Image (cartoon, rainbow, N blue to C red):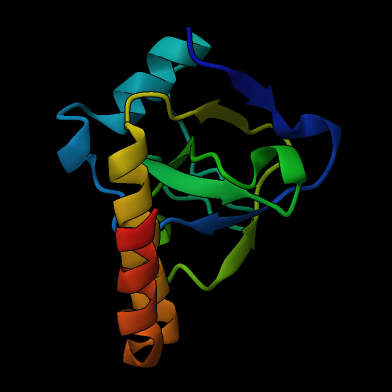
Length: 135
């Protein structure tokens, strides 16, 4: 059973994970979230958004060390799911986050690589590829 984190005990800032679509999992992330929490999706988890949650967004939670290498799933609307990964959002205090455990390490690293390339740009692309080859 995946780990479920209740975000009601403190405020959390999240950041979308670029390149984390369900192509690796072949299953709906929102259904995965519903099964893990035993809850039905309702409103988007992003503070200030009232639209219906129709997606399970892959996010990173705040800057907590224990969560820095994990992806989590929270229910969001289409607009909040597609937002820029560099934008940070506060989540509603009633949010339950489910740790993504369906993606293996290779897929996870590939997505991180794509995220860095979109964020930092091409100048370090060659160095990162070399580092990846040496691992």
